[in-house]
Image (cartoon, rainbow, N blue to C red):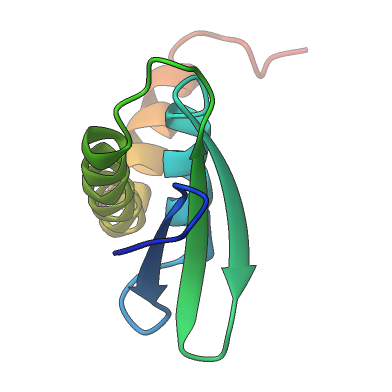
Length: 102
């Protein structure tokens, strides 16, 4: 994490370890606290953060953002691993409702 001269924080996430979707989900979750500009390079997803509110503690906000990216990445991994089970359960649930009968 780097601090720029304008008080912005820059955090890089390796493309090999994190998805753009996880970073975007985290940015959306924290958009009340942070304005986040996202750029990509072949190696990294670079996030430049600025406070969205005057009372924002940027050090804490940057930490929260890193944690949120990890959380979102894990959620996406779990979604992928459990998709077949989820679809089976939903299929069984809707098959008993009579909704498909026209």
